[in-house]
Image (cartoon, rainbow, N blue to C red):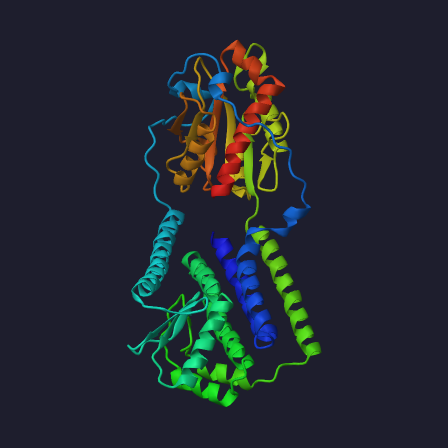
Length: 476
């Protein structure tokens, strides 16, 4: 969210300056179209990395299975004896509640401010609705015109036109023609779109500047429509000057627009030649396309892969658990290798050991500390006569809260009622980065050990873990 916010602000700001330099005041109808294009393009480009178009889709795999269908036997509570082979301190205490992190606080603040803007938008709609309900309109073809005697501003909302009582018929005709142009060109649609976007992208200053440009462009278009009716420039410019006021309804197109000087200047402005206009618009489109490409690839670079360093338990002279001639170190490595092959553009699995070698725990910890990985996942098979997937995190680690959340996600994906989240001061979990030790299943029974030793069992376990890591990567 933070990366998207930064990139969308840069993207929309660049588009705004492109509009000012190459498009504004050249052709008002094209300006309106261009403003809407950069509005949606600048906000959506960071969400749609262009490189996705050139990547092959990964073949989908079925990741749905239940751990209770895989691991036989009765579930029992994990004891301290179960993890003696990990050579670590044994402190297994029921876990505590998650502590709120900064991301959660930012989400709450964002939600509150967004709610305020939604209420503001709703209030504006209700005010216009009430004004329409209590007003006595005169029919002018498809328009509904209300002439007020309360010295209110003149504005329109779709085909509803509100005009200040004006004794001068010529002036009244100017205002009515101007507001009808707003209605005919559906300027209220543009304003509603901008207001809705502001409810959710209020943090983007470029969006506020673009709103101002859209409103100003609406006035230019309406003024242009009036002059095309054959009214004199001098008289109309005088009318604009006399009716300028600062107040304006946010969802309405108002004749009394405060930017009077620019409107009057635009009335007398000479339009550029067709060649110059074409060159300006071509330059604008080229730069706009460049900004979209930049935003797309920048978004991808700002949201890199979620890298997992997989500590494959045991190895070499340390076989781990032994069951019916099957060594845990071999099963761990096979599952880890299968898991690594599932790596994609979102999640990358790196193996701490990719062959049958012994690496002592302190050396493993040093590798984990110096690694650029986002998560250390130490993988083991459960020992003893029990069943259930167990997740461990170090409560004394600076990343304890994040580690606990990840452990819960990893364990929950197995849908095993006997699963538990435990505190454990294991050596391998003493890294400052999020670190989790995962024990999968019961290696004690002959049925389970055979399943772990099969390609089907290894593939299913790897797919389930990877599915959970994908979810963790998306929510980080």
